[in-house]
Structures are given as C-alpha cells and as structure tokens.
Amino acid sequence: MNIHEYQAKELFKKYKIPVPDGGIAFNPDEAKKIALKTDGFPVVIKSQIHAGGRGGGGGVKIAKSLDEIESLAGKIIGMTLITRQTGPEGKLVKKVLVEKSLKIEKELYLSIISDRSTANIVIIASKAGGVDIEEIAANQPEKIIKIKIDPFLGIQPFHCRQAAFGLELSAPLTRQFTSTLINLYKLFIDYDCTLVEINPLAITADENIVALDAKINFDDNALFRHKDILEYRDLDEEDPLEVEASKFNLNYIKLNGNVGNMVNGAGLAMATMDLIKLYGAEPANFLDIGGGANAEMVENGFRIILSDKNVKAILINIFGGILRCDLLAKGVVQAASKARIKIPVVVRMEGTNVEEGRRILSESGLFFTIAKDLKEAAQKVTQFAR
Image (cartoon, rainbow, N blue to C red):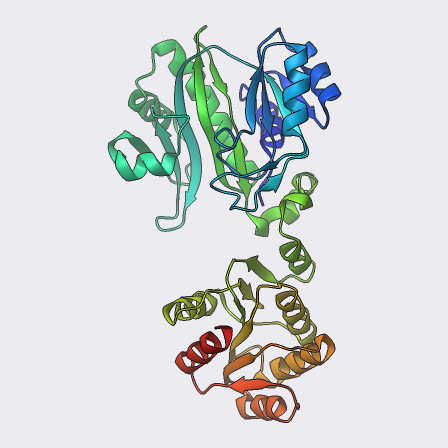
C-alpha cells in the first residue's frame, strides 16, 4: 500500500523526523491560510498524487506572495499531471501540500528497504540526492552507499556512523543524521514497511537536516495490524479494477496489454505473462486467484478481467491442486454465462479432476478453446488477440 507525501510526513512528525512546516489544501483559499501559518514566504506548492517526478510535470511550484499561491494552487488543483510514473494518461490532482521553502545547501538521498535476497534490511544513502536514484545507481554506482542490517539485531550505532561517514557529514550534522536514521528505522519496523524514502534529505543553510520529501510503502499482508494506516488509503489513486479485485481478496494488477490472464500461483502467472510476450502479445493484467479459490472468486476474477475494455482474448492457466479443475471450470462457465462473453477464451488446465474440468467446458456451449499445454495456449491466445 502506498500513501501520499503529506501522510508520510505526518508519520515522520510522529517519529520526530524533521519536516518543513505546512499542511494539506484542497482549494486555493485553504492553500493561502496554510501559507499564512508558516514563517513567511516563499512557500512550496506540491501536488499530491501517488507518483514521482511531479516537479518535472509542473506539479511543484514556488510562490512568493498570496496572489501567487492563489494562482498556482488554482492551476495545480484540477490539473491532469503527467510524469514518468503516471503513464501518458496522467493523474488528476485533487490536493496540494503547502510548505515553507527552505534555503538548501546540499541534498542527500536516504532510504530503508527490505532485501528479500539476503533477508536483511538495507540502508541506502547517497550524496546525490534530489534526483532519480535508479539513474544514479545505473550510471554512478560508486555514489550509492548500502548498509545491511540484521533484522534480529536491529540498527546499531556503527550503522549510523558508517552512513554518516559515507555522506561526509560534519560532527554536528552526524548527530542529527543519526537521530533521524534511528527514528526512520523504528518507523520502518513498527509499521511493517517495505520502503521508507527521503529524497531529498536536505542540509539547510542553518546546518539542520530536514526531510523535504517522504515516501512510504507498507506490506499489504501486515495491514491488519495497522488499522490507522488503512485510513490513509486513497482509492482515487488506485485503479478501479484493482480496488474491485481487493474486495474479493484477488491479487490483481492492471497492465496495458490486450490478453487477460487468470492463473493460480504467482510464479505460474509470471511465466504465463512471459510466454504471452514471447509470442508477440501483451498481458492486460496479473491475476493470481490463489490455490484455495472457490467458484465465486473465479467468477469475480473473470468479471473483473472482462471489465477491461482493452482485453481482446483471455488465457486461463490453472494447475489443479488445492483448486480442482472441475471447480474452476464451473466458475468459468458461470461467469462467462452471466457476462455474455464475446471474446475468445483459451483454457489450459492440468491436475486434479482435469478430465472432468475439460468436459464441463466442452459441454458448456460457450466458446472455449482448450489447449493441451502452456505453449499451445500462449500461441493460440496471441493469435486471437491479434
């Protein structure tokens, strides 16, 4: 789960991580009132959407007067902001964060992530803050500092010293940085985060460290422990089909292709999408209905796939273990009958009760193409999609 910058900064304040003074505004009048509460001009007006690169898309502006705040906030609120992360369709801006503009001497990068490959928590820091960290990592990897933390031991003073030394901080700044890093790690652990990121972490002209930006991602599987975080969820920032799928505990992610997929198992789903691309089509979604899915979940998954107008054909790839093939077939027939399906559906299934499942599909009177293996299924669905 992702949240807005202003929400992340609310959590930063709770953990005594310094952020600029400011507040959230839904219209120009509110933006002016917030600006008056800060310590003078200029102020920064920042669009609030779930995407990076907002400044390059015109979603971050500096205002030096109340008139400028009203004008700029009025332009940003209601605009469709297009960045490298939104795609060409962009995202509608409904609110802005208004903050005191600070005099910056230097911009750093700081984040904490989970590294599944090593089962460690990793601090990532860089003196090259304020820019795309992926670009720095690709072109100037020597500027990236990585420090592994054993989650059973937690963050230690030497971790902080190592990061501060790599960032070439002075003794006074090291003390501030250490406090910030320890608190950031505590937030990361307390809320089951997968990422906390500050880019940039600024060193101001008066020798203070301040988080100018804030990004936090949470582990969806741990949200049951954090009811307060669930209140931060902004459904307007999520794809409507993904929101609908979450109501039925379906693992669905919308993509931009033309072949809909229904698969049980994340690994099998990834392999299925790879084969679709290999044979020249593009997957329209990732949908893992899980090993314990029932007919109702299959029906809802089918309905959600069909709601995507870009889908020209559907591939159902099931290995029947916990989810029996006959149960899947019943769900597919039920959903296809209700939806009055008009596009080709290719089904590849193996496993428990596979012959019964194939019989149900073939006798349904609906347009199903049954493939003998995954290669054939991918080839046929690609031909149909074209």
